Length: 342
Image 1 (cartoon, rainbow, N blue to C red):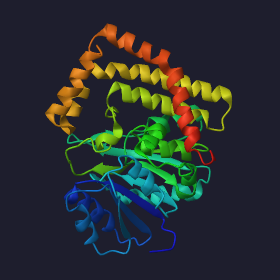
Image 2 (cartoon, rainbow, N blue to C red; image 1 turned 90 degrees about the vertical axis):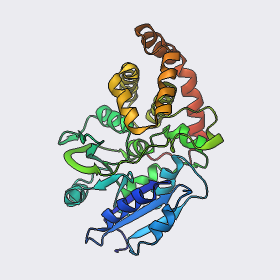
Image 3 (tube, rainbow, N blue to C red; image 1 turned 90 degrees about the horizontal axis):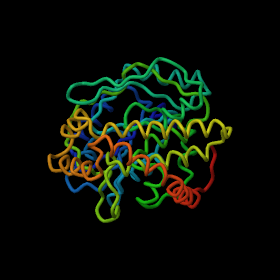
Image 4 (cartoon, rainbow, N blue to C red; image 1 turned 30 degrees about the vertical axis):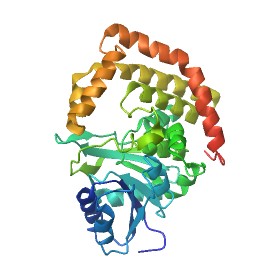
């Protein structure tokens, strides 16, 4: 493997031994030697680590967290990447190697591009989530796309730009929540974004395995206190606050920041309609145990978001409370900041 790999594939996993093993074997199946595969096990209690360390390939590095760190594991693994380009994968995903040269060439020829999104195929129904084939020069569109990203696969960033995200003194799960809520990969995209954003309609990731979600990134024991899973309305509101503070620290014209903030608030308001959407409930049932979904639906009823009046009053109350939440989140960002470079 060269001193500087062309690309780093980063995979976080926990208690999904066979799923993670198949993911890694797929990545290593390519004859290319200019790649690295970095896996960080989030303190599994099964045989995940043993299975992965049994794979003999110099392109693979396996790291183990000393405790379940939730989404902080994504931050720690990003600091291990050595590639010119870096991408994250769920252990359920297969990278589409026929697109690799296209991705690498785009970064090599477009030095103003630090962030690129590609298409993915997810779910048992093989739903395609694709972008247009374009270069997004509008800073508001680019920022909103980055801040709204909610998955693992499909994002590529220039390795040298990762220092902008890794310049925070993050040490606890609470720190992680203040910076990126439950969406670390979107955080990396937003912090690495310095110029235009490149998107491609090419499918770069396909979900090939389906493992039952366990809320691992949301629920990590008593450390989270009363923090709710990522799909709960209160957590969505907290993400809005984190995103707005993220915008504040971007070196952009004040008017651009304001317009991006207003668009973020508008999207938050639009999302309220999804809480009563049967299609969303079905998607949860496909990924979570029945008792988890029923608990969520009971919570939605408690907030009266299953009624039109509740869907009007609840977001109104949250938006009125937003200045206080922003002030608290900003104080946390300032405490964690070593330096802001983008």
